[in-house]
Length: 291
Image (tube, rainbow, N blue to C red; front, top):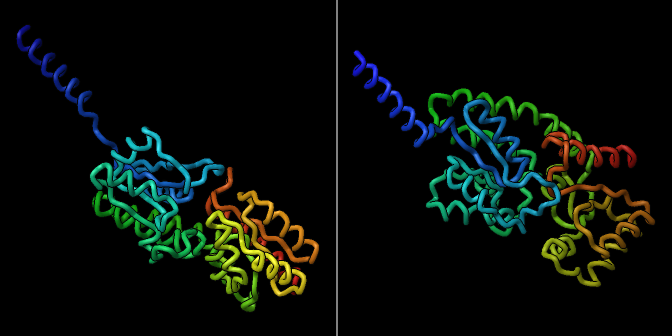
């Protein structure tokens, strides 16, 4: 009797040790490069896994980010990686490749069809994040067929929360009248195009984007556009510090050209929806004032 009890106890101990040596994974693991994609991933995964973001500090520039060892380990164990692509977070493909390309990659550039060299600020396309949610749900369903329907339902529910964005964009498109606007750099260009605006100073903006000084002729032309009121407003990325841009903001204000301020990363205490709406509403105020 005692021998049977001892054998039973030994069997239980061995099973316990086996469980400790090979911990059971709970659900799918999704790692996103930036927090606004991470928000979407968390909503789509729901309670069937985990969703984490590498960058959640609005002060960190994804272009210049250098992954830590901890991030490398997280990517190594991830089932799915969500990235922007198009060069915005170019460190992520390197991490995925370093781990044998094990993780499935959901890339905004591939989902939306943005080619190399095109505008990398894909999340400013109103259709981009909803399409990403659907693409992620489909990929999750392949990895976890049991919960496929729930992932699709989660994506649909999340996209419903984004609906006010596309509704406002369409309203603004009706009021844009194909007008010309100036930009400090091409961060907001996808949104402006969706609203029906034309960019007046693409050469200038691309120089700022690439970290070089615009030509004197580009600067002169932009100042002239302000003075002659050939642009409806001036879009400025507030996260870029530049004496040239600061001077042009003053020139625009002196000419009564409205300033629309935007950011490249998700501000603290904002959701993706509230962030987008805040910036589109700034355009709405300009339209209302100019009617």
